[in-house]
Image (cartoon, rainbow, N blue to C red; front, side, top):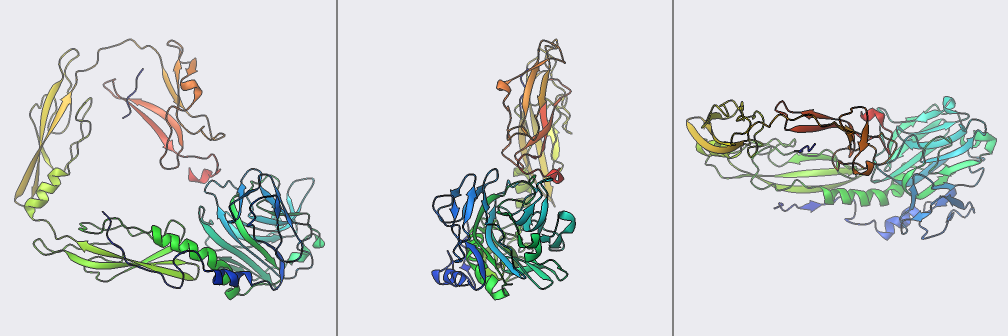
Length: 510
């Protein structure tokens, strides 16, 4: 059984507070100079090997487990299945205060639950965490505990948020006294003033499950992404220090967002523009306009009256990442309104009628036009189709659309070909579409099987049991497929749900 399936405007750029490309050596040097109170410092800029060198001077060299893939000096790559860093035992011993600071780029396929780092212990009998300090990106928070999850004291933003994936972020947590503060890109985003657990109290100072990229819970997933410049201090860093540590990553990602921001062709605008509120690498965007009578800061366009010249204005985007900002301007020109004759012609030219070359069922004729058929017995003016009888010749029908704007009209002809009805045929078998589940990378795609003879209970896979249709759009997953047959019997539709669970475990997306 065969089944048919159906030029950019110049933008002026101004970058404020930050350089246009990579951070300057001077700024990177300022971050490197924040050494007071270092407990350990893994730059994670090695080119090879399985050791994470401690630059704090305290000789707490880390050991890379699993695949040690170094990103050319740009951090350690964690593969999500075997890679993590084992930090020496008792790293929290004696600490009444602490700061943990690092740069992280989480892969978009990170599975949950996971820890970005976890310092503490794991119960040998249950595999549960048994006193620990950790940060995770889902839901984004840091917590300290004396036992398992029931003893956690969390510092988390409200409302809850998820750490951005696919972009570098600077993350930090500080704790001193009873106050824990969580930072993102050098900006405090959450504070808990009721922390009663000191880092050094975890395990009475004895901790043997200290990891970067691995959870203290043995059943959790490993981290998938990159981490660099990982630091632990025996004090709570100040805001200015944390902004200095964050600036190299924030500067680079902000510049990348500014470069990526594009509104397309902004000359000859005739309708509203969609102005993004966020950039690809996570910067927030706000908009201002030089003339709201032409285009507002929300992208609403007001066209001049017909016969007037183009109107012009400038849109300014302000991108914010942490404490830094950048701006980018776009020159906008707006065309005047059309005359009635122009509007009618444009509307007629924009009409679309699908499948005219092979009309097997009723047509949807756009309602903004009135329609006349050259052969109403075959295609009526409302799009209802009566196909020729089996064995007769295909028929050609001209559909004429008339669009009216005021007193002006415009017409357009569409040529349709209507094939005869198919001959009746004995049913030869069944075609079954299915997916195999979320357990494999290609399980959530469309597979086909055909019945053995006309038996609906016995099937054989086609395409060597490999997917027949794969998706490259949306979630890139296809689930719950089924086939619909048209009333005429010679056209079929394959329908499926755009959803992928493999690699993320996110059933909430369903």
